[in-house]
Image 1: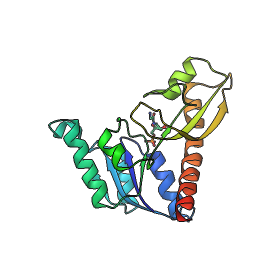
Image 2: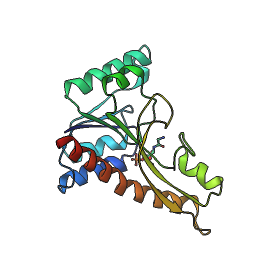
Image 3: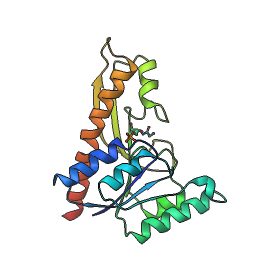
Length: 190
Ligand code: GAR
């Protein structure tokens, strides 16, 4: 399977996925790493792993539709089979959704449908829930909505600070996302 990873920032999830591929745990190739921020750290990670990286920013285009058109053309030029959102902080537009039905997945740092949006970890922490976690789901036109593929929960310890919770959530993400991708790839090969 030919994978594209879309990421806006740090890219620790990208790192976990690319390492899983390098260790033979995912039988697929990342043919594109795209960032909508030209200075995102994830692009450094991509270069270190010899992944084809590209980036451009929404503000360089006349409107969102032309930005998405350029992104779609990029994905098509790389013959991408599966689009993996890994900290890509934008809503996917309808042209992209139509071009990749059930072929765009996202990871979110909370147990959806609870705490969607940009601050899933912080929102759950401040709500003092007993447990929170991580969700991987297919993407639709909403914010962190779409059919859930897998979830993994973690109990909040009374001693947890926002920082310790963030560490726990990221550690879960780095296990769960590669495992889900490995399964999707395997199912595709059948
Ligand atoms: C991850 O925690 C991911 O779940 C979250 O952004 C972070 C990116 O980290 N995504 C969302 O909140 C989507 N709504 P990373 O750049 O280190 O992979």
